[in-house]
Image (cartoon, rainbow, N blue to C red):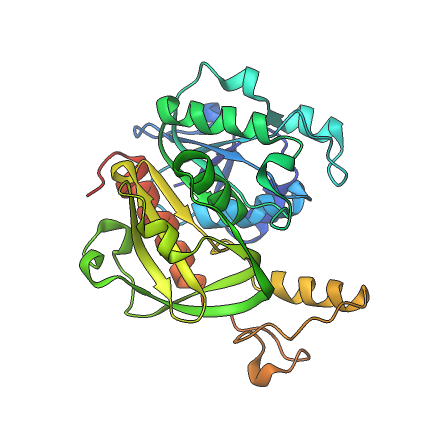
Length: 300
């Protein structure tokens, strides 16, 4: 089934070149199934570069998905032109009276900044409060997950002594292995990490409304559930494409930073080799299960 995207969104041609079915607006869809309406609150610095990653992740479901992009109007983007945002994105005021089946709150490069020092923190809180009444299920990603855990449940973030960088194995907490969000998962699955801060397992477990579903012995808490599936906190980056960590590594080297090779990413830990995308199946399954069983309202 197709992704239904804003008309003339530049990433459409990229997706079509990858044989992903895309249409320009609901008028182009001839299907009896009502499209799932999913909004993406894109907090990433270069919004255009990250659109494709999330759209690829949403394209694996048999259900048609209509996507709208949102942005924080109180923040002046340095990497995305205002004209682009005004053409293809919507503000809170434009959507505050609308209902969505799903919402994705993306990551942001803000982990080392205190939440309340983020210039759009109040506006983000408004979006998050609105999601409780206007969205069936919200998936928070990486910094968006840390922000959501703090805003909704008071879970603090903790700075790491050094960047957690690479692809790490995770397992499902035994009591929750049969939950629908994990259908099709293997015993061990991988996810990319590029983080300077984390939510500690012990802080999550202190909150009765939160359920820690998945974690890594080496990398900590990964997937957290709340309010019967209406909130999903994914503390890493399952949506990342093959080359994202490579680009981050090369960027940090060019800046003269003391950065280690991403762990479990390049074959033989040699940056000249093509990265292995260990997490592709996990990413598609995670987003597909979220759409089918939580966004559609059929959660456990």
